[in-house]
Image 1: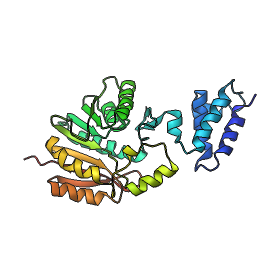
Image 2: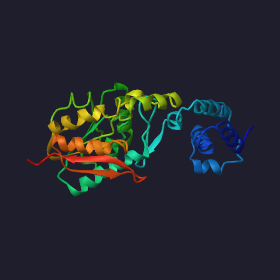
Image 3: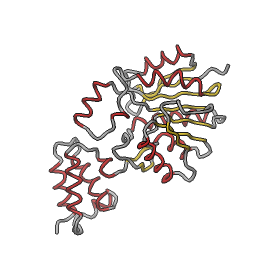
Image 4: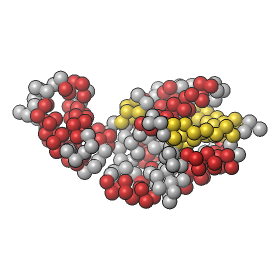
Length: 280
């Protein structure tokens, strides 16, 4: 019978073309064995049970085809929470945690903020994380994709005692009422880059990536539409690439937002653009 150590090193050797073969193999094997990675390393001499090696090799073959590890394990940690993910949604990126951190900082400074809308929610990682950290907030998560909303709904029921509201909507088309804050990590990758991404990573949904020729198609719509749904003094927070933040800030200012600013992500790159609806 093959041991945990032998299986781990066999998987890592098969994933040599990956940027992180040993890490990928260890995460996948720990998932198959239903143990933590720490427990995995202390279990080196233990034999695998019947069927576990076959399931492990099937998972390794998926990784060889550039299927993200998160889609293989159906798990991605975001803001300390274990989100369920699959090919219906984008796997949350660490950079997006900056959006949650910025929102929480603004919330702390403005305790009157009660209602928050998360547009293009996908897995729900942003809205659900905000609700987890600030349970009294009324959070609404919206997306155009029914499949994405199914994943969001599942994460909300798993991770929250008081689930978020979920609405199917093309941006703000089906959204009623005003919000004190609107947050969004919309598709912002230029179409040409999306084609390159899909050639090496076919699993991620194009709908969650493609932002048009310059990546700003949806953002151009979100900025003016959000003004109609923000309460006076309400905030709009948008994630984008470093190359887009300056243009987004200018768009916000031309639309009538005040107090605009750009926040940096964990790697000290411009990532989040913030604007505020005038009080009057």
